Length: 391
Image (cartoon, rainbow, N blue to C red; front, top):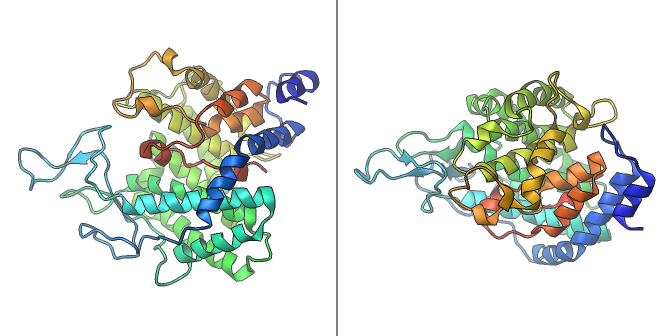
């Protein structure tokens, strides 16, 4: 039976989202049907890839050691009046000379695990698990190649800072690593010690995220950075079983993110003020819907939560959806860079379709680009393998 027909003939429109219903099962089937060919192709590529961690490349400008993740602020440039002075900011304009090797390695890692885990969910082939373990151990366990569980040297600015809290957004790429491992962890190839070692790495990272001044700064950021702190912290806490942090993230979504970032009409005013209002609005909506996907359960469903004055994640999707369907209707300024590359197959649409019983959102998702090549889009699309996010 066609998806739309199923919706119309069986399910009435719901005021609040459904929870673990046949609709979600149907969405999962539609995701597999849409992505299966691409997933198996990407997984075949992943089977041929050797691990590349932060130890593979280094930058002399980093204040850390070879195990420390290092990146540089995207929008910071040498002062043309005096190249020896501290860098100056050009908001929205990426400096192509900045060090990004560690970020690219982490994105590659995320892509590999996401593809292998997705293919494993479809086929049950143990080869995918074996290959994923090679990469997981390289990043989190092997002493010669592991990454230290902090981001103390991320988004550095020459002459100004050796690292910043704003750099924490780079580890949103580890979310699909975690989701992929959860999708594969029942395989007999994954021993309990390996799982425990990886969970220990993330427990240490959560401690750093919640206690270090950089982590606290990022948590309190008022735009998409604050959203992404909650999103990734929630993801890692769910993986490690940290109920205290999970509850904290749920509370922060309800009491901070929704009231402070979503307007009454569902827009994101703080993102609309930026030089890339379209891309940042999309990114923030994706992050908020991912939080709902991660943390909603039978007793606390964030999809149906509303603030006392009626703000909700559903309004956020409804506001942005017409522009995702046809960006030519966008009535705000165009982004200064990468306008032509948005939108792609945004996770907000597929997650929202499952939560709110909305065939139109899913059909639009199916028609959008599922394999973007623009590095800016890839970096701001941490959910690239939705199958491992749908239970």
